[in-house]
Image (cartoon, rainbow, N blue to C red):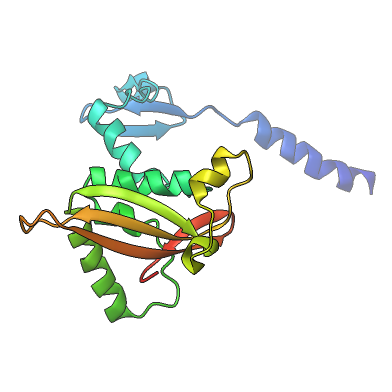
Length: 191
């Protein structure tokens, strides 16, 4: 009985003793070959280790910055700056990335995206956040509350003022509702 129990261990030891190293070789045709034989036996040369990754080029770094996950706006100032950045690059996708799109239908979303594309082509004059008290016409503004050292009130909307490009020197105002979700401030169309 004891001999039967020792037999598998002996067989395992014999097999393990025959285990060999795997060699990476480059054949005469330049193909990578993995073998248990020495490269010289195959008239091949040992393959070098994988080359270290090349440092990213400036162009690659710029692309990586553009596709890096966006950070959400945690406060009114960050949201205003993100909107201004979208106008600076004339990028409707960047502005669309600040929006909460849930519950919008296909046609209305397409119309909203077209509107954003037209909007960011206009010269930006100002981005102003407002709260429920301002909307109702009562006193108090975001800037005066922050200047007084009080916690800024929750913003409920954002107004983007742009110059009209018809030569009249006029201005246009586009309002967005602002909602807080998952610790971030998001724009909603038609605020």
